[in-house]
Structures are given as structure tokens and as C-alpha cells.
Image (cartoon, rainbow over all chains, first blue to last red; front, side, top):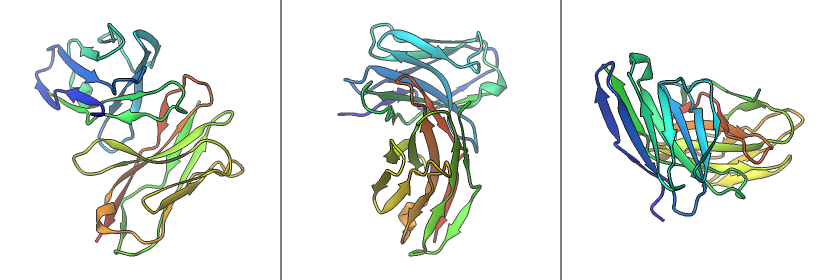
Length: 114
Length: 112
């Protein structure tokens, strides 16, 4: 069990550029979640997948954000036309459906928009 | 909607002191409750959990009891160590099978 992995760990970009992050969940986990964490705050839910289906999206997820999980394995989160307010830590988590929603988190991708 | 309120930090303690970090919640039904810990430079790790009223979660000397009557899930440890210095997050998951986690803002603990 290698845990949840995320790539890259850090991303610095200029305002207006597009960025894409990848998350690889624990292999047998069918649920995958994306959260955003800003300094001094707890993680806030963005979206979640069960297998390849995106089942819920937060109102925090503007039209510039899109997430996919094409084969029910890894997931990508893309932010188009980045803004300085997008600077945050983006966390991915995975869980088993029948495990009282205990979620296992990856190390996160820290995004800095200049 | 669901919400979690934690005591603000930082909490500064001497080694071997008693720790309490307060957490209260608002939710409908019977949520599951969690404490996660984030050590410097690392990701969130589940510390303990409780899934129904009066359950006590425990791990690594930490304990928390699910109190539905007071909607609380306070974290306690009898004797803290320097290695316990971290940020602690209280979280809840709603009682539907598809619910996400709602987190508090986190409480930083500094032990010296």
C-alpha cells in the first residue's frame, strides 16, 4: 500500500495560465475527493468521484475548474486562466465506500499564482 | 448545513502537560466524527474517529468521546510530547453514505 500520491508537489504559475494536477488514490479505493486548503483554514470540499462518475461538486468549483477520473483510477484537476485567489494547497483523498467515509489524504499540491 | 467549530490556537504547552482541544459541531442526523493531524511539511493523517454517540476514539494516547447531547468531540491527551506539535483538525461526515468531510479551521499545538 503506497498511499495516496499527488503530482506535482509544488506549482508556481503566472496569472492567466492553465495548470493541471494529478492524484493517484489507494488502489482499491473507489471514492476520490478533491479539497482546497488556504493558510490558516481547514480543507474545503471541491468535488468527489465514485469510480469514474463525478457525483458532487461544491459551489466553490467555478467554471474555470474541471476534474476528471477517466477510468476510475487516477484523477486530474485542471484550473484554467488561473487567478491569484487560486493560490492554495490542493488536497486529494480516497476512501472505500463501506468504510464510514474514513478518508486517506495525499501530501497535496501547493499552487502559487503570481 | 454542517459546520465544525474548534478552539483557536496556538495552544502552547510544556512537555507532559494535559491537552484538551475543544470541538463542537452542527449537523443533522448522526454524523461520524474525526480528528486529523497535520505535522509540519506533511499531509493530513487520521488520528482517531467515532461513528456513533458515546463512542470513544483513541490512538497514540489521544482520546475523544462523541457527545451527542452537547454536540462535542473534544480531543484529550494526558501527557503531551514535543513530537505532538502539529495542527489538529476536527471533522465530520454526514450520515448519508455519500457525504464529504467538513473540517474545522484547525488548532496548532506547540509543545516545548
